[in-house]
Amino acid sequence: MKRSGILHVILSILLFLLLSSPLMAYDAIETASTGTIVGTVKFQGKAPERKEIAVTRNKKVCGKEAKFTESLVVSATGGVKNAVLYLTDIKRGKKFKVPSVFNIDQRGCQFHPHVLIVPAGKSFTLINSDGILHNFRTNSTKNPILNKAQPKFKKKLKVKINIPEIIRANCDVHEWMNMWLVVAEHPYYAITDEGGSFKITDVPPGTYTVRLWHETLGQQTRKVTVKAGEQTKAAFELKKK
Ligand SMILES: [Cu+2]
Image (tube, rainbow, N blue to C red; front, side, top):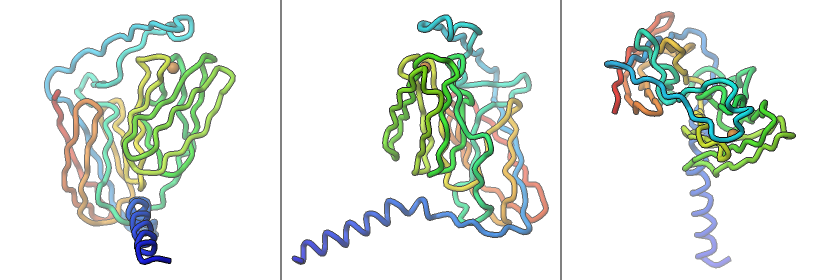
């Protein structure tokens, strides 16, 4: 083999290692004494009203019930739903278990749930409950783009995404249908509930960076210190950008 050929092989191997390294950055270990991070995400000021979605296609199926935009859902007490919180710098901790219910349902021409945590490299199911054509397109930058038509006879479709990334997905048939996939490389991710509360459990003691991500309100980071057997509180406030 020529010298340039060998160099090419070495460079290819290095590039492969570099690209695949994010998947190997987390180690599952036995976690005996751990702590919890609990908190809330609140909206500062008066929350904007959610707009009703105008159903322009497949009205019989899609227009049965009124639908409202999900890009910012704020409770009566100011809690922000569907904010994602995760540790950006955790290297080892609990095993990443795949959730028992692990799918996206296209029902009433909306994605359920609107935000889903997806363990990287694990398959999940797209369900078509509507009996009409939907299409699932991911707008990824780190992963290959998925573009999966799901005709009415195709009730279930398996998909898999390998590289951690927060990805917007949409349906090309119904332009109002969109959702977010949070492809995670470790189990320390949480989504806020209706009241804006979240909980990250079984965290090994240490100091970590918590990142908050919300689809329209942006991001924030915060350092937290977790102690064994204790709860660490983290309160976030966001305002409209
Ligand atoms: Cu659709």
